[in-house]
Length: 105
Image (cartoon, rainbow, N blue to C red; front, side, top):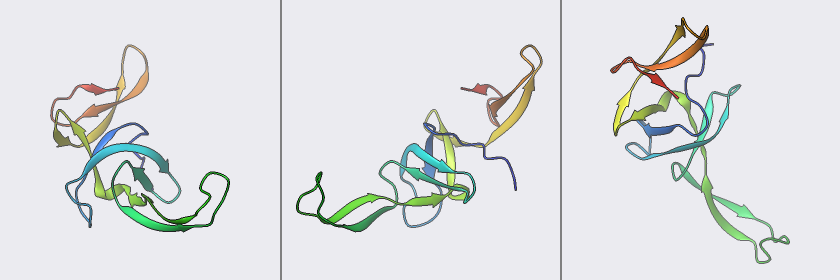
């Protein structure tokens, strides 16, 4: 299994699937299943029972998970691959952009 290079809070673009072309921020990542939930992408309808928050219940739209292989990191409005490199000064591994070779925070 390869290292997941995307993190919570990254802005990504969907490159394949029903939501292709949509963009959003990553809300959560499930590393065991290699899936992520992205804001406004892969909306699914869920039936919800009445509770204290929602007294009527009914059908609720929420984001479904999407496989990480269908997501690509956005940098300056363009999609880029992410690599990893050891920083000599801090001795820590950093994520770097494949096009600009600059570190990603």
